[in-house]
Length: 461
Ligand SMILES: *[C@@H]1O[C@H](CO)[C@@H](O)[C@H](O)[C@H]1NC(C)=O
Ligand SMILES: *[C@@H]1O[C@H](CO)[C@@H](O)[C@H](O)[C@H]1NC(C)=O
Ligand SMILES: *[C@@H]1O[C@H](CO)[C@@H](O)[C@H](O)[C@H]1NC(C)=O
Image (cartoon, rainbow, N blue to C red; front, side, top):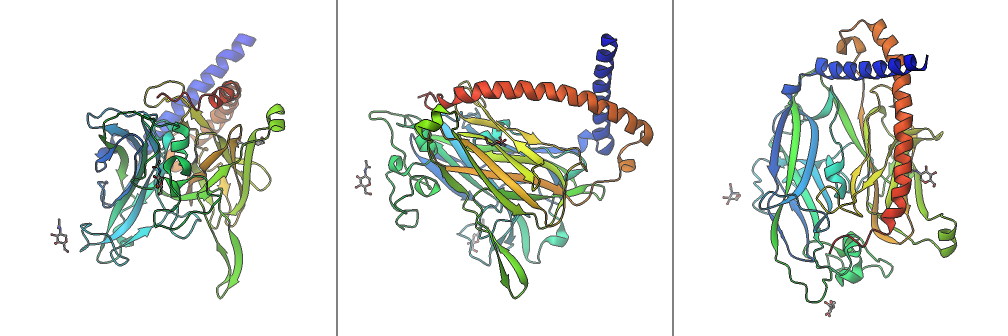
């Protein structure tokens, strides 16, 4: 009896796999996907130095298309991947804008030259308007969007007369070769950068210990006495995948939520409005000795947010910095919509650097299974280990949302009844496999979490 069940589960699982393969192929032939690899403009870093530049009108696929993925990494002039313990990738951000056709990027843009096309997210005042953006976790984080979904861009009907669609890239990289305190430099601690006024010469708040205001472009983190290291030229190499637009494709909207969002409602001439104030960064206070004894060194930050327009969740991922131990988006009743957990490296090679977040887990709900309603209140949660303090950490959450999911008969050429039946039993099988995997992952994470905390410093010097 036992063997029979075992065999049955395995067949069900294989069947599910086979069906999901034929599913994606039925919708879109693999070879319709186009891939392009681009290099950012060159940036030059020496030990302890910082680059935080904006590159306008970068190379990017053109035309009316549907974006399927965006991956990136820092490489040197020979094309070799550069590990995070040498060049820490604090973040990179890719934003869409409409540039005036007569403005050719030879001078600093003025207001009439361009305007940013923001994502559908709820932050305001010029922050977090990007289409893509991650940090140290870039190499190990899935970004692909399943068929038939994608980010629609380049629709000529949307582009105002006299403008064209362009893209800008911001790369913030910190060279930590030979520095006194690698974690401190990556967390932009002001004392290590000897910074007391911001980029614009304004004095920092006395309690501002670290964050982006202390590691702006051309700042310098403290290097060990006598350390010599050559400057070197680096690039962000980015890979974009897309398909030509056609009406069978379903566009997704990009939402970015920020755990530091101090939003409020107020009445104005148009009625009830919402004002968001996304501060992007926050600090983690170290826990007390009694907390250490009680193993309660977790900083949990939680806010509630309102989703103005809902839809079906197609993808989700969080962005956290070193010390992060997970982030999640819940419904008001506590049901999870997506949780995203960091993976820490345990080696020295690029993509597996010890003590750094080298990937974030992602969510791909079965399309149609997770719907957020218009005006629904959501809870965003971000957890950090507080075994030690941290400055300038982040808690962002990206979701991709579709207004509709295609009717199943448009996707599957299998008899619907059979699909239903097989799928249901296969789900049970898959669920059991999943429970196994999740418990294994939880155990590994538990073991790992404790390890990671004493591994912040080993970060190769
Ligand atoms: C860009 O525009 C400026 C003035 O509008 C012009 O002098 C310059 O030659 C242009 N550069 C290119 C590459 O077209
Ligand atoms: C730090 O900055 C101050 C003033 O900006 C300067 O006088 C001092 O020499 C700097 N210290 C170091 C170690 O660079
Ligand atoms: C965050 O920490 C709280 C308290 O320990 C825990 O209940 C919650 O599940 C954690 N969330 C995530 C996403 O890890």
